[in-house]
Image (cartoon, rainbow, N blue to C red; front, side):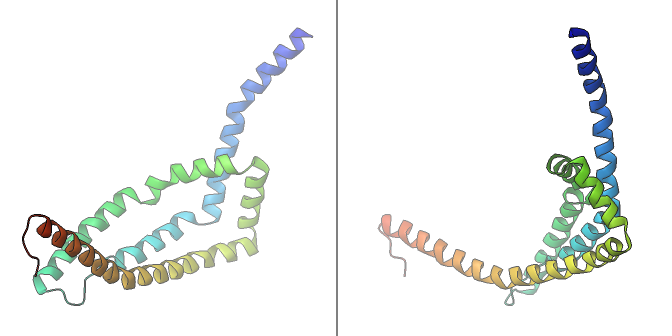
Length: 168
């Protein structure tokens, strides 16, 4: 009996790396079938194009500063948020959250004609949704800047009052 249990444990432990490889392969199939890389890159390009949040009343030199900051941020985004940078973490999530059977079903579905059709549309849908989000953020940022200015003005007035100076 001990021998049978030992053999079973050895078989299970030997199979673990094979199962991990199988799951890794399935995750790669799912990502390829769902066209994750292209979808991600399209979404990020949309963000890159809309990244400059230049206030309407910005002076010309401030606009130049905003553009320089935009270029620097886009460079940082491309480095830190590229698909190659994010794929290992995303793959880990898929491996941890989905069973091998579920990954197999996802891969089979997205490799089917209907799945391919959906995957082809997901990139555009994702890009459009990202564009809406970015547009809404651009509308909100000036409000945030106004709120921040109000709050900082209040803080500065209080500081002046505490020192005995007037903040008129």
